[in-house]
Amino acid sequence: MAIPFYKYQGTGNDFIIIDNRQSIFSKNDTKLIAKMCDRNFGIGADGLILLEEHNTANFTMVYFNSDGKESSMCGNGGRCLVHVAHFLGVIEGEAEFEAIDGMHTATVSDGQIRLKMNDVTEVNVFEKHVFLNTGSPHHVQMVNEIEDLDVKLQGKRLRYGLYGETGANINFVKQVDEETFQVRTYERGVENETLSCGTGVTAVAIAMAELGKSNTTSITLKTPGGDLQVHFDKTNEGYSDIFLEGPAEQVFKGEWL
Image: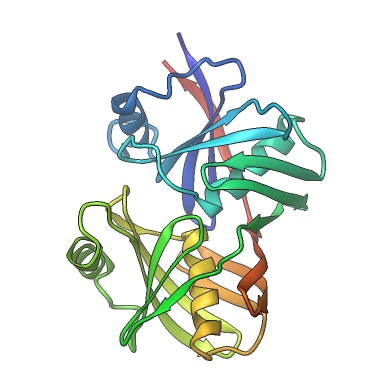
């Protein structure tokens, strides 16, 4: 049976999205998911997302990395899923949905998606890096030179060397000014650099606030795929009212035969 799909990108982080409200797609077929995400023999994507029914919210988000395995929260993927839900008429201007890390809300306005992330109550600061979880685990490390950095080589070394098989996403950061940071990310499950990572830039923004590199609560993150904004409130308990904001675009739609 042909499987209809939508191809989306959010600041270069690209996804295959399937409307699975009628259970047309098997979540257990990891080989098929990996094949569809393959850039040479498939559609090509950083991940695959299913839009599914929810008992009380607008929909459920199920996310798989390009290796075919179900993974933790994907911020850019969540933003793209909200966009396709709007396109399909599942939502109007606002959304509430459940992902693997819990409930999220979002708004849609002129192609910009503003996604509420979960609160962060624990930020671990080490000598050379910061570690925190923004729906996915993230290592944040500042570097002097970012343009010529071999992100795949250095990211893989840290991903496995520090965090073992389970791994973590590795973010390299260079400060531009108090409100702006450049970010490049190595993503586990993709096992390569991606052009952007939503949970990654969220982690970077919070890490920079925690380190005192920025005193603002609205930070611009410049990724190879484009700019994203992260807004948050800093409290005695950590960080709350965290929003990831940026564009999402439907690139094309088709059928997997």
